Amino acid sequence: MSLAESRPRPDGPARGRPRSEAVERAIIEGVMKLLEDGVPLAELSIERVARTAGVGKATIYRRWSGKEELFVDVIRAAEPPDPELPGTSMRDDLVVLVEALRRRGLVSRSSAILHNVYAQMKSSPKIWVAYHASVIAPRRVLIMDVLRRGQRSGELRPDVDLDLVNDMFVGPMLVRSVMRPDADLPEGLSEQIVDAVLEGLRPVSPVAPPG
Image (cartoon, rainbow, N blue to C red):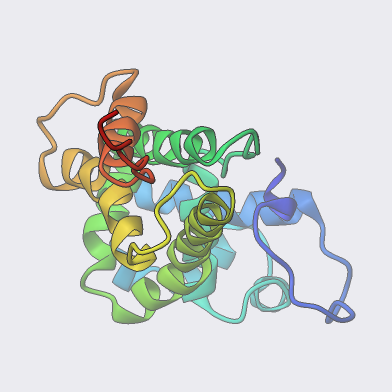
């Protein structure tokens, strides 16, 4: 997926000049270079980014409303792309979504840029809010859609709190990848988590009365 395709576009006609993928890439790579050089997020002004990328400030503002929106795209460019769901079953879709979290955990451990940016985002409320709104919230909505389909298809009990169930699938991987950075993230962990949680959430077949 290209950088130009990596984020949703607002409906309606595009503002300003047509987007250039090469220009966007140069700007995002310029931000990454500054981060690699150890420049804190708080010191990354649009002016500094423009100088590093070799473009004018207006070029950046035609593509991003401000540095918060720009930084979210930088993070998304450094992360693995969002997966396509197989759609074969609720269980299969959940495994793919939890596996995406595992892969992001591996990347954030190996990427100095992501490790530093994630840490600094917590001290920058505007960037965190922008990241949550454009990245985290849509991913959560996607899982909720999968869970609702699972209820409709009979793969999930109809009486469970889907918001809580969402946390039950996502939580273990986040604990492993964020709160326990020394914990292993082996292949097969996603299947193990999904199957363990589903064990207690599948509809219970009625017990036949003794003959």
